[in-house]
Image (cartoon, rainbow, N blue to C red; front, top):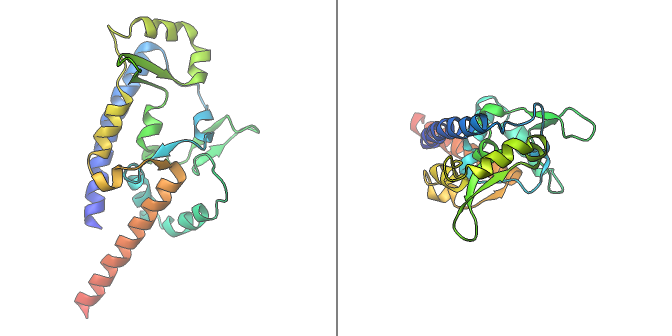
Length: 201
């Protein structure tokens, strides 16, 4: 269990670096997210690794909510957006994250990030809402791709997932990634408890 906690602290340290880098680019380029927007959180195609979900799984465990959350995730019958997104409008497009501090790296990168196109050149991936809201800033950012390139999404995700190959090697639907992270944390907690009981005996 101690190893998982140490690994989680390392993940969170990288998250801090990622958030600072990507947030700074968005603010400098005028590409900030619309206040209260949660469209990206509704997408069932959002993926994360088990490693990315480890800080959240441990947070839920420490709050005494791990088993309850695991049960609720197992009861989901079809692909859905993030389990922890709280809808604040009828269509669900307005809302908020209820675990914002523990959100995985994809949530920290999604608004505006760089990637390599088929020719190997730097391209800008931008949320469609930001693109519609801020067309001038978007065009300016495209013009400035060489002089002011965006931070690269793949590089940022690699910084996290290279911390543990086994837990970071596979991208899964976000709710499934959390389910597996919770299972791992609960198993380790149970196993640690078994060892403690045996030592006392």
